[in-house]
Length: 284
Image (cartoon, rainbow, N blue to C red; front, side, top):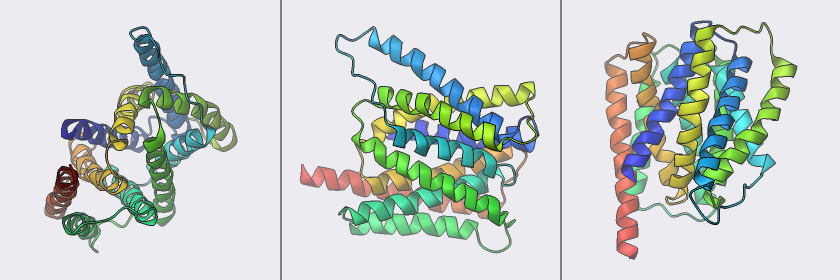
């Protein structure tokens, strides 16, 4: 399970880096990036679904759910727009900070209990994020920060919905296919100054066909086996990974504060994961 979580979080961070790299380098506009991302994701998922279908006798039917597709579309479009003005690490921080708070609030509201170690881990992880945002860091644009938080709310809703899906592959395929017309509508209504260069196309296709489609199947399979609080907290590793990716591929060099914050957040995440595993072992 831990290996699957690591792969999924690396893919989520890769999405931040790929999107920021494309938009900061003015290789593509955000709506075109969003459309290519969801289209390539749908194509790859369709290929995976039919390849899987051939190997089993009674494949599950595709579960069509427009609400989940809208969550996915809002997340993808808002994500792309926000990265026009926000760097990779800060954007991921705003995104998954919102995700964490939303999923924890939802979990508590629906009766999930927090033991002492989980609570400590949660607080430590949040403190790591707050430390990263202390005055002195470049303050992100407020408007684009709010857009990224909207993206976070949509991703939280999408992750929560994943706990009730019977088949991660068929559900993710359905969500991507239905998201295509939703994102296309957004493209028609809101696309301005359309810009599509070869490198932007490649980055969008990598984001959708590799870092999104396969990772979301994996993530859906993970969230079905862990509680919402654990699911929200492990995603706090993504900003740390995005900061590192941004420094390597975009030139956004991390300072000492970023490194310390990364360590603090990862310690908090490990405490939450350990507390969840300990709780399950104790009940068994």
